[in-house]
Length: 91
Image (cartoon, rainbow, N blue to C red):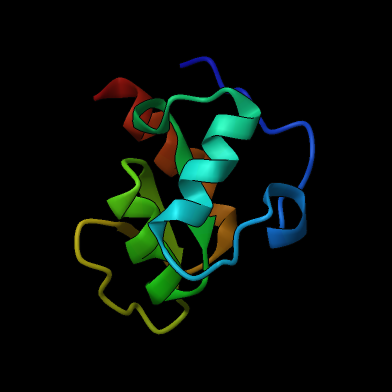
């Protein structure tokens, strides 16, 4: 799997959209020129992960307690992310 990382870190100020729903993530994807269906969003907020999933991306919740996140993947530590991305690339 070829991995492309954003060239910058995104915040509401860069896309002029509050982080309050799926439109925030749609704005980031549009700005970065990335198809949401071929992207992965990683966050520690179940609410934000829900919005990212709704925007059409594969989402990963980092939750040390092993919380549930609907359709999102859940990892307990960021160190688990590379192997998850490898598995996603194989599917």
